[in-house]
Amino acid sequence: MATQLRTPEDVRSQVSEEEWEVRVNLAAAYRLVAHYGWDDLIFTHLSARVPGPEHHFLINPYNLMFEEITASSLVKIDTEGHPVMETPYMTNPAGFTIHSAIHMAREDAHAVLHLHTPYGQAVSAMDEGLLPHTQTAMIAKHNVAYHDYEGIATDLEERERLVNDLGEKHAMILRNHGTLTVGETVADAFLRMYFLERACEAQVYMLSVGRENLNTPPQGTEEKVAQQSSPDNMKMVSESLAWPALLRKLDRIDPGFRN
Image (cartoon, rainbow, N blue to C red; front, side, top):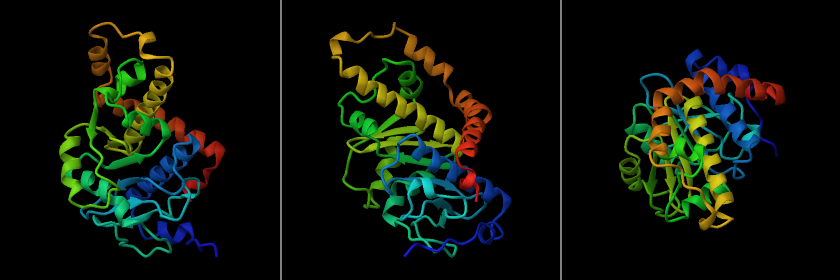
């Protein structure tokens, strides 16, 4: 039987305007992940911190496809992944292991995105990790950390190691697993993921022609691009330029994510 959805009014009337805005943005991120073909059936997660003093977060219902997710259907959970607000949906507490570690350790980690795309997984399985041979890779690479694979992320003890490996960076390649980004906003985390995923895709294509045919950028170029793509610049571009345009794109395709 199909799950009965609560009406948007039921949820919106129970949350603050600040939380509702985060819900709309996070639902948009789920829809965009599906639009760009980055989803993995119902698996992987995107999460966001709920504004306020409580340590509460928003995450997807475990049984919905990403293109089905709306602002109202997002589940509000605690640090262990358990719902703190009545919901008709099931959740996957184990899936929040990675997210909870980063949300709790980094005050600036208001949004955490984690994907299992073929290109991200391919680069995560390469010894050298992300190579600086494209502009997109250079935008992402200076802010990428690495974490070795420890199995499916159900072990709470892994949280400390995840946090230590991420440090102060805003992106991570989970070895033999996938990609992850964090941001002060959903918009910030999404744009970082866009650059990281595009860089991984380009790397898979460029390596298909053989390492001997690659052109290495001139010395100092990678460092210059790192300065040009500083956290402040990334935040400005994501929140003021890219994210509003992406929301308009979604509204043209299907504005149902706002419900």
